[in-house]
Figure: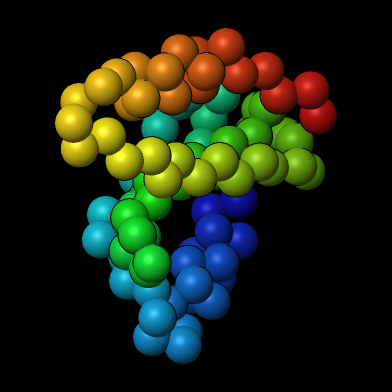
Length: 89
């Protein structure tokens, strides 16, 4: 998945309309291995690329682009949703 993600990140920034503002780093989200990175385009989005396990041929990309300037708690809601994520394949 690492080499696929490197190629994907190149395509995101190839036309100059997007910028990687947080480099990819390894992460585990609800016990699933993967990577996270952040991109600035029309807004700022934090993305997770996850697999069920290292042997899986499938991956899921989840992009979090929630803004909460008045601190209403939207990011807490996003964290709660991500905490129950289940990857089936």
